Every structure is written in structure tokens, then in C-alpha cells.
Length: 360
Image (cartoon, rainbow, N blue to C red; front, side, top):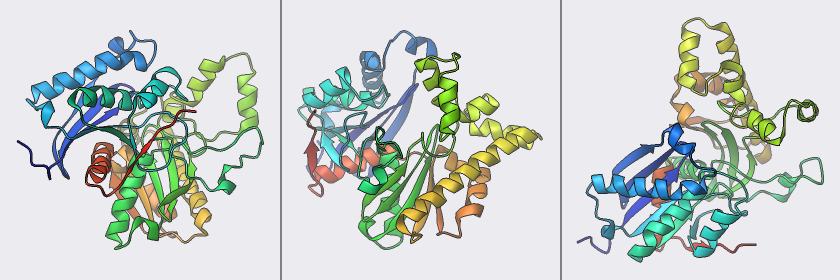
């Protein structure tokens, strides 16, 4: 029997080719697992949402193998998907949210499955399910919304969950609350995004379409050449999008999205790989400098996080260009399962409230 002061939370983070899960008991992780999906299995499905039954069954099978009693759960937390713009923090998963993600999401994305699967597991157990710091959290200052073209309004879309969580940790390390610091956070994974956290809010961001190129994304490219490419006859809408997202960045230059592979090639004397990798670090550093101007250079810390933050080579190249701005803190990994669990835990303890999603 689990004490009423002990909360067990299942966290679910669907990715494009895998689903990561973890169970936390209060702040302590009991176990975690990554459920890999073979490419030939995924190819059977027309959309991410079509993978629901397969992924849900795999999660339940994994929990069964761990002999984990589902009835001991207090809540289920799923990664928030492509909803309309949200505020930071927790949202209770409702049928209205599930229907929106199933039938009319803003974009096709693996994270759309997070809330749907969480709700399907929690509902029969009569416990709540939540999303926390979804990718569509939008707290931009109004001045940051101008793009240069009235028909296009800048919108926030970034690795909110991890960047807010590590910003909270670094603020605590500095002996301050999150609302007392200015932090530039950079998440480096398959895509690279950045944010400025000031007064507890993400007041500006660089999305993976506006900032540096990354392992799989082209990032910011010259717009006139992009228009020319799209109208060259060589691409339709789908292939042009794929060229920018999924086949850009390191994939386009070097044929791989694995930074570890690039570093092995550099160590083996591949001068071109070294030049491309340095260019990525150069663009990341430029983006951090750009973000620092949002708070007039008054930055308490720069955070480098995400999977690529494990790379001493890349961190060294970036740090050398930006440490004049503020101390550089490196927090490797995604930390998203822990962030989901701790967010839900604060709600269960009454330290934070949970909002309701209202579909437009």
C-alpha cells in the first residue's frame, strides 16, 4: 500500500522512433526504459496518431515486465504536443485535448501521442493525467512577434520542458528563484532551439527554423535562395519541407545525424567534417549572443543542454565564443522524463495548479 504522501508518476515521452518512459516515486526515479520501434514497423502507419495502439501496448508490456502495479500510480504525465499556444506549467489532459491532438493538431509530431496515451492509461485507473511545459508554450513579448512580414507572425516552439527545468535548477544553484534571473538556455538535440528566461517567463525564443543548423535541421537559411529553391521545380511542398527538417544540417553536409560519428571522423583527420562541425558551433554561439541582447546583456547564466551537451568538443567550441557574456553551465541530456514527473508532482502536492485546455 502506498502512503498518501507518496506519489508515483508514470512519465511518457514519445519520439519519432522510440518511446521513453519512467516511473518516479516523489523525486526519486524507480526505473526508466526506452522502447525502440523498428523502421519497418513504423512504416506501416500513415500518421503518428495511427501508432497509438502499438505504442500504448508496448508501454503496458514494459510495465508488466517490470512487475509494476498500475494501481499504485497517482498520475500519468505525457509530453505536450502540437496544441494551440499554451501558458507554461501543467494542463490536465481532457477528452477535448485528446480529440484536438487526434483530429486537428497544429502539426504532425510524435509528442502529440504523449497526452493521448497518458489519458488512456490514467482514465481506467481514475487518476489524473497531465502535460507539462508543452512544446507550444508561448510567452513571447509582443515586440518579439514581429517577423518582418505582416502575414507571418513569429510563434514560440522550442524544447520548453527541458529548458525551463534546467533553468529552474540553475537558478536554485545561484541561490535565486526562477523569476529573479535572466538565463539564455540552448537545447541541442536533433534540432537546436534557444530561449531567454526572464522573470520566470520565456520572453523570446529561437525555434529550430530560425537559429543554427543542427544534426537534422537546416535552421535559418537565406530566404530569397529558399524561395528560389522551392520554385525551381526540383521540390514539391513535402520534399522541400523534408530538406529543411530531417534532411538538413549535419545530414545534408555529412550524411549523418549522429554527432558522435562526426567527431570520430574529425579525429580520423576529416577536415571537411571538422569545418562543418565548427560552423554549427559558430552558429550556436551567434544565436546565444542574439538572445543575450533581449535582456540588454544582463545574463546571469548561459545553459547548454540536450544530448549534444555530452560532447566536450562541441561544448568547448561554443564556450570559447560566449563565456564573455555570462558563466556557461553545461547540463547534458534531455531530462524530460524527470521534468514531466516533477511538474506533475508539484500539482499533486498543491504547489501548482493545472489549467484546462480549451480548443478554438
